[in-house]
Length: 103
Image (cartoon, rainbow, N blue to C red; front, side, top):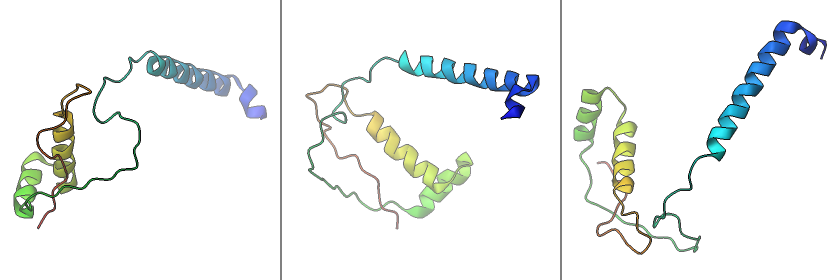
């Protein structure tokens, strides 16, 4: 506790606290998320969708070309599919968006 009263330590703690307050203020000021089919009340219903298997060698080739992991490629694919979902509340995706199994 006595170290807190040291001028250098107190200054560092004050700077850290100021940064935390600033970050909190930025988060509070963010606008609400847009309406989306993904922001519905929980229903307890579960759905699963399968696709044709994806060739793991092709995914590895893409990952090497981009300098990232296989997981990065697959997660980017899923994120892109989810990001392409319509933003209107009453709309549903025309095709299934799911992670694909690798061979």
